[in-house]
Image (cartoon, rainbow, N blue to C red; front, side, top):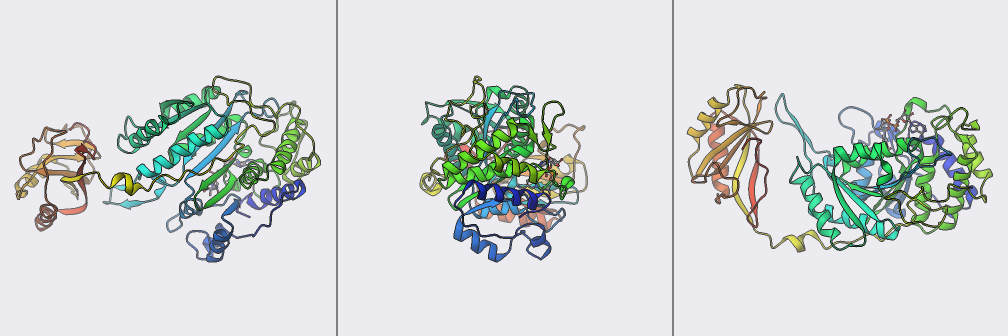
Length: 497
Ligand code: NAD
């Protein structure tokens, strides 16, 4: 039933589902805070996994992830364990029933759900430096990009905007963008564009009417879907589906809202929308239509929970239970005007039958070829190594000269960076340095000015280098090997390299 407002909104959502005639035989599992405190560090116990494997489908109330070390987010664990790689978050304006500055808004955010910084791989490297690994895979990009295009086709959507930050993260976000272009070539019927996430997010908040489907990476998708739901009226209105080969999970996009828990004021609409998506996923479209129509009619009639209540515009401020009562009382009724898709903007979706405008159909989950088949033939050549040192003397030149004297055996020091900025050779005295130094070693004889022509090195030479550095009293934190892939550089340059 979840945490915070979870039990309240889940109880009312279940009542609405039952009243609408949903043919469900639910199994109930406990996840969240109580499970964390009972010693299950991921917030879910073994019996719950058994149930999930049996049913493959979960309607989940929001849960609270306790702050502090040792607790992994249950949401992330569920998505990753069940392989739920596509997070689909539809939002549309419900104006004039629900007040919004953006009456023309009908956007589906397709968010990659398993990779990126949400891989949750974090390490403290030195007393001053912590890091979080951003993991992006070609196979993961292909899966989500293909899903987005299939989703657009299945739902009569015309345009996909891909948002990344590949002007900065050329390898990770760059891969996502490249795969978008590659896969997009197979979908000439869909208008395609790319925007840098910062200006993209700004435009989403300013002119949402120009967007249709937005495809993006995990973290950006999490952020922009809250923005879009909020400017459409409230984060309390939107639901989402998490789709994968191992099952499907449906939920509200918002969290457990502890600030309003237990007060019967929360809006149950987000979870209800999650339930509607679930019904469509299992083919119960008639029940989904009935529920959605009654929900829209309730909003049109001005029965609003506190988050969307506006004096003079709403007719009555209702609590969670009373809102559900109102929806149940309207089962069988049709909305007067909200069944139609949002007014046609430049990017509005093709008209679909009322009242299932937003996020109606779930495309078949694409099964891309295994990553290994496409990538096995790629040649990977070792050309050097970044050795990360903890070093407490802030003078880069002193470190550089010491390392230059220590190399040998087919290797040479190419440069040193601190927080990604080149500090040796020819650094700038103004650069602020921390205690974490990235020292790049390449084959002796490599032109140290080159950014393209690297020579092979042996793994043994790199191992012996670490021993030499350690014997000289230097503290090796970690290493990252440098590779060429079919001759292409597989590592970023240092700022200023
Ligand atoms: P939140 O979404 O819970 O709340 C943000 C704001 O929106 C609050 O002011 C809240 O009162 C309001 N709000 C949210 N849902 C509402 C609803 N249905 N009706 C009316 N108002 C609503 O975000 P938060 O406060 O940052 O997070 C609280 C907890 O939820 C944290 O522990 C976080 O980890 C967790 N969380 C869980 C999920 C999930 O289970 N999928 C998602 C996000 C956050």
